[in-house]
Image (spheres, rainbow, N blue to C red):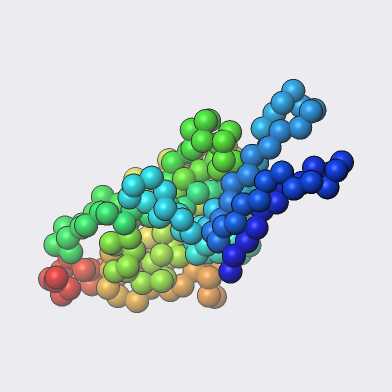
Length: 209
């Protein structure tokens, strides 16, 4: 569905600018107040970013919002302030465990000032396409757990204790089914850290390209 952005002089009604587009938008504007401060209205959902990334806010922002609504520990996090980008050029190997599938970093001050995004969550499309929806949800939980006000906190040495205790060690690479954190799991479940059996991994020779 096409969209139109019209800039109109409210005094004369004259249309100054007309822009037709079909994707998201990042509008920056100033007023005569606030010493010329730049304001922005941003909704980038599905678009190319730089040379190898694709903006995935359209899908990942929904998962993040559901987790925020469900878990009290995420109260105050605004998913619209997160830029979700996915690397489409990366090619991995099912013989080798990746260092990461999804990671988060704080946006630099310049990007935040220009776009309004405070955080960047980057994922690898090659791996995301090979794991389950439940694992993607758990990865998103793990990323949100890093956000601590305006800072990033350090995770546990082996990963977040509640994820390992609930989903099992190696949950992000396993071929075994894991629970969906958005279906039937609450914060109380995470307080019961139980030792889980080892799961069958994609690196156990079962799944070869």
